[in-house]
Image 1 (cartoon, helix red, strand yellow):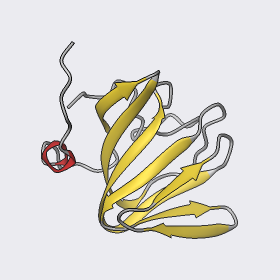
Image 2: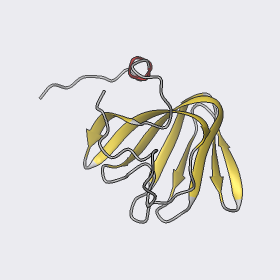
Image 3: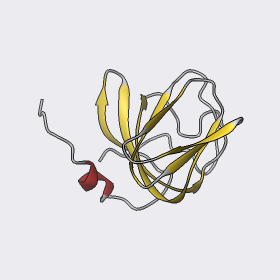
Image 4: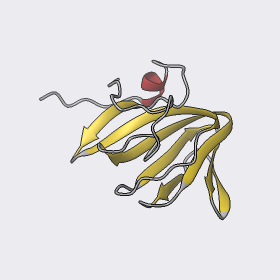
Length: 121
């Protein structure tokens, strides 16, 4: 087993597309994912998993049915299982996601944005 540190800037430099998370690490059935956000994603929910969104750079917004929360670099938001939400970013944002390996990015929705077999970087 090789133990190595992960440089987030280096990993984020390996891709340029939006809404296509990559796996940067795994532990205890959880995945650490990196993604770039720009524009609005889709409304969805995860019935069995909580999600953590940590903003590395830029600013993301998390729309909930009753409010919108703006998340800046160094801040995170946890979305509890079953809560309908829509992430977005007016300008490019780099985001670390921490969630169970079972999470599919579009939750119960299956469409062209669904990513089920994520690339490891």
